[in-house]
Amino acid sequence: KGVNKMYVEGRMTVERANDYIQENREKVNPRYRPAFHVAPPVGWMNDPNGFIYYQGEYHLFYQFYPYNSQWGPMHWGHAKSKDLIHWEELPVALAPDEWYDKDGCFSGSAIEKDGRLYLMYTGHVVENDVVTQTQCIAVSDDGITFEKLASNPVIGVELLGDEGSIHDCRDPKVIQHDGRYYSVLATKTPDNRGKILLFASDDLIQWSFFSVLLEGTATQGVMWECPDLFHLDGKDVLIMSPIQIQRDAHEYHNTSSTMAWIGEMDWESGTFLVENSHEMDYGMDYYAPQTLLDEQGRRILIAWMQMWERTYPTHELGHNWTGEMCLPRELSINHNRLVQLPVSEIYDYLTDQQVVENIEVIKEPVSFPDVVTENVYLKIVADLSQAQKLTMAFAKKEHQSLFMTYDKETALFSFSRENFGYAITGIEKEQVHTREFPVALIHDQLTIEIFRDTNAIEIFVNGQETSTSTFYEIEASSELVFESQGKALITSFKSAQVN
Ligand code: FRU
Image (cartoon, rainbow, N blue to C red; front, side):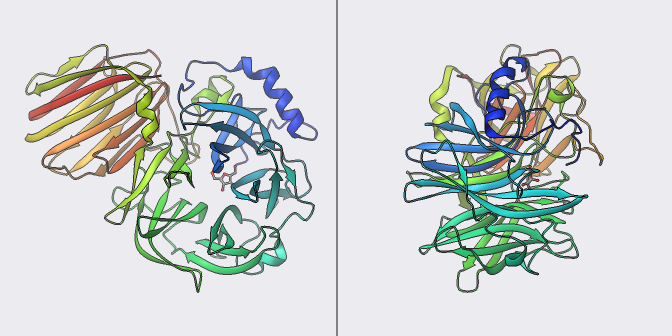
């Protein structure tokens, strides 16, 4: 992440960051800004951090560099919400202002103890090109201003020992189990395989090494970032973001991927017994997801809706911001797979709902010229018993379009942004512009929910799989065109505005 050569000079503090935001928020160009997704007030955003339900509200922190729309020394930005849809911006929570985090307050998590909010994060230090990553704690009484512990780092070189690499040791997710605290930590082996460690504590201050939770094989990625561990629907789930995991059929086509492991925790030995694993999202912009448990007992996930190793149009165009979060999603387990559905709150914000029934798509394309608005929700239910293929051209302008296709023979759903709008290219590797993934029809029926928010499209297919991507339309188009091979019957086509 050495791309940004334009770091600001001098000490970076929370006060300075807050002043800078106030003075520069007007410089953000609204063209591609999302309306109902969290985006930085100005500057760069990556991973969600410290996602927690705290004192009746949802708090979201995030990796943040206010001074530029490219990655730089990480701060923690902060927002809160009552409904997971409308977010209120709060002051910056952490800045890289101590010797142990001077080059960045990297990703981490939050936990409540005795009414106080604890953040556990990674202190990132670079000296003569050598990186050191240690784990640190900051505490708050009001959930807004944080004080870093005098005893930081709480997990340093000595505690890590030979269990991991001090150069790649980050993203602590702090959880509670049976009255003890555990920190789930990402690291790697000397031969570059992903490795997840558990550290244990009784008070969040004094930590000790507990176990190696899970270790990867040579093809499962060179580093596993941003782990999270939770219990859901009778299973234990470990999610993580592997770098350079090998492609496997339709999975793991991006350079950085996300992966869910379903199984069972052995808390005696601190190891994870794997029953299944799979990629979490089949889009192009989804990374570093993190979860919380709320008052209603829902396990809710949010992810960075962007990707590493890419060019960022809002940065290139000088729009002074980059990065945003996906819609919060409620998790469940189905057939040993992790399932994501939009949080139910979003449906309270749908207006102008319109439904068209029984649209037959046979030989001629069927066009809806005005349906694709900037903030649109679409729900399409299609009976494909007599069709081989159904294609949707979304935001179609002459030959350009985002394409979604379901092919019954291969049972693959595909999403493509190839040649669409402002180009997104790879920094290092050849870029992926199309993804396809298996989806089983339910009684020959395909149900697609689409949330489009200006530059983002989140597709939920048959309540089973998701595909999340950004795109940068040059000339706006509101046309949607259905085409089929054989006869497709769209039994219901709903559209609504998201407000
Ligand atoms: C994941 C990540 C984390 C790290 C952070 C730095 O996207 O690379 O591993 O803590 O971003 O911003």
